[in-house]
Structures are given as C-alpha cells and as structure tokens.
Amino acid sequence: QVLLVESGGGLVQAGGSLRLSCAASGRTFNTMGWFRQAPGKEREFVAAISWSGGTTLYADSVKGRFTISRDNTKNTIYLQMYSLKPEDTAVYYCSMGAMSRNEASYNYWGQGTQVTVSS
Image (cartoon, rainbow, N blue to C red; front, side, top):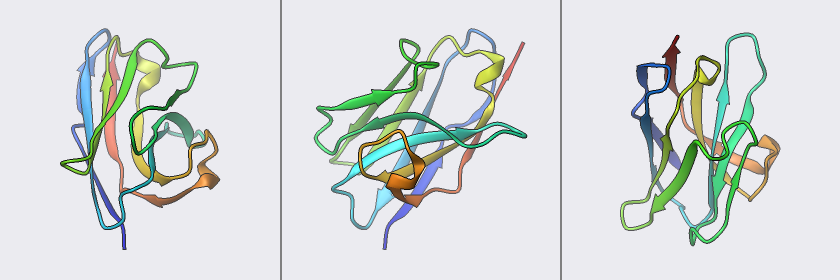
C-alpha cells in the first residue's frame, strides 16, 4: 500500500514562492509527479521526476519557475515554486507512477494541498 501526503500549500502574493512536499510510504521506487487542478478545470500535469532524480519533466507553463526534486533517504519529493502567478492557484496533488504527462500513467495519489496566489 502506498500513501502520499502533501504539505506546504498556502496563500502567497504574486511573485512569491512556496515549496510543496510529498512524503511517501510503502513502495517508493517509482517516478513521482505533481499535478494541479484549478476550480472548474481539469487536472493538469505540472512536473515529474524519476526515482533516481536523473530525469525530470515539466509542463511548459511552469518551466523555468518550478523545480521538482526528491530525497530518497526521506522518501519525499518537493516542488519549489518561484515567481508564482494567480493562474498557479489550484489544488496540487502528488502522484506516483510512470514517467508521463498523462495522469492515467499514475496509480497513486495524495489528498492534495491548496495553493492560492493573490494578485
């Protein structure tokens, strides 16, 4: 059984930064990723990282502003977000699965953490 628990969300002004964390328990030797869902919109891919950390993938909308990383000694992945924009406002979900931008490739999901960016 895999359990993913996100933390670090909150309210921030535009231009600010936040770091999200996702602690994993159970089977952890997989790619992990972040998705987000804004009100009234479908869930969308944000970033993914391979188990070794050697491969990363980003959505074009966050490339250059967000950085995904992982610490396998802590079974935790991170999403460092800089230069936040109001359009980054969403519930952010941690996931585990296969390297892909498609959410169908991810088998396990956290409960989500809210990120709100005020203008």
